Length: 159
Image (cartoon, rainbow, N blue to C red; front, side, top):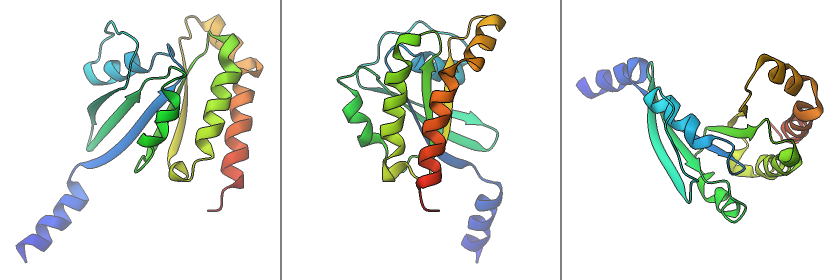
């Protein structure tokens, strides 16, 4: 009987665990974001070869965040991290206009994966330096490219 109450109490008030996958093209700022979340400060990083994994606590949720390298040779390995992913953070360098289409194609490939069908998606437009730049990014076709991909895949999947 005690186990029943303990399980009920933990279910109602205990920590929830979430698995988050953070990906994006190389140099988008994924590792910097991860350690800002974890440590609350900006740290010097080097390009990620492989992955970084950290647990980030927020209220009663424990997020296990997997930050996977974004170099083109590593991207085919992303799929090995899809299983049991509940949240997907796709980081985009909003100043890198030359690679917006490349980022869009990678996101499109990922959204087609069945293992990510139930994952919550956040497209994180990183490296927005000034208010003028933020306005420029939001008004340009930058976001329209991603919104098109997201809506196309989310609307085509059976619920």
